[in-house]
Length: 280
Image (cartoon, rainbow, N blue to C red):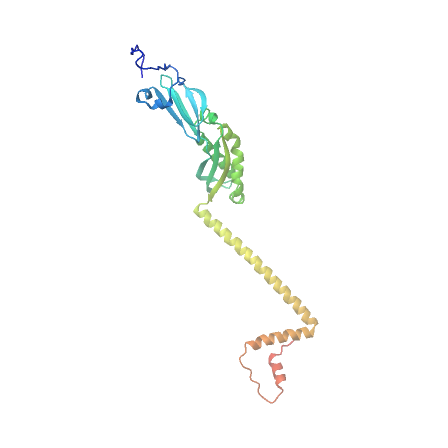
């Protein structure tokens, strides 16, 4: 590596090849093998930047945007010009909006754990025109979530819990584009009620279930009473049916009797009839 100056070499003894490099520019356009970039003497004149396979970067020279860099390794001459490389992860990313304590329309406090999956689509917009685009996206999601929850009472919110993610996703799409990202999906992990609210909701649920059970019981009792009434009307009009029903009950009673003793010289059948007779 020869710096500025005059140098003398023997002629014809060795075949020399010289490459003159202009170090005042940043691009390395000279015919220099990349294998030499790691040479100790040459390395001090070169600056190197790495852009990973899942990244894109913007190149800023002297505080002016120059171009977008795809993944790869980049080498530039080291001089008084400043070079900055800002990188963005181009993979699908996930943003957690966790433990948000929000007030509903009826002033009930709920804690919601929310997430959103997004992807950078415009690296220049994300890095050049916005500072900390992820933090801005977090704030946008937080405010959209707060606005949605604040528009409903607790009961309405619990009924429409499945629609929260869809509503928030639609609400943030336009603002996300201004950040150079697109929100692909969002969802709610948990809707957590405070302890006293849980107790109240459990009491309401128990009362509701008891009321349902009472309705079923009353319905069954009504159906049973109606059936008994219909049977009584039929037996009133049909003496044979009454006798059959009478014999059915006699059979049930007899199943529970271990022994029957009949005394006297009267007719046995008549005595049994007197024992199980039912006044009509």
